[in-house]
Image 1: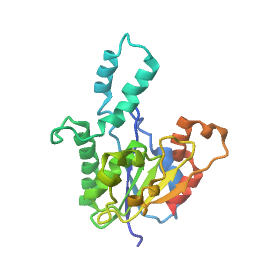
Image 2: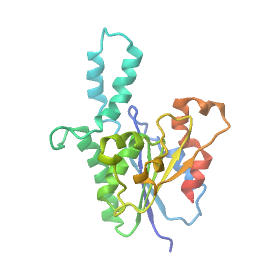
Image 3: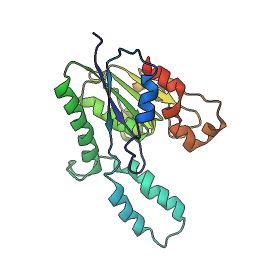
Length: 228
């Protein structure tokens, strides 16, 4: 019997997700897998946590210049700014607390039902830093990141952080040179165990920064590597 693998999917910044957000991505990976592979996907959705608060901040911006840029700041950059430990110990209602609890609760549900399965996380954008932080306290077989800003986040830590070697067995990072959010994680000497894979495309569409940042979900190359 094949070893059961449970995969948690963690998205990045953006507004409320559609219910089928992960479906095409998961289907594309499944088509690359052996028919008898025992792999189970568990979507995580934290997108609704910040909607109302970001809407309030957007109203505070009325009458100020550069409304399009401010809108982007309120509904996208604010997602990133929210993932910072608060001045006080994290508590319910703080984004840092709530998003980690959503991921922890999902992981706990899987762990209770399937304690002997291998646990894998696939994450995109901000979700990669959330998942990387989560890996410090949970046994994760493999963390796969796409369009990850982890090198940017390393500025938060003395000596640019560390790798959670006791709890995270392996890490693979997909990056696209046209994606300004993506980083080559192994360039941080403390994270050199991460395997960086450059994602390429001959489609001119994915030369555009925002398109390049979402390209991973439809990349045949990424699907192949994850299936491996």
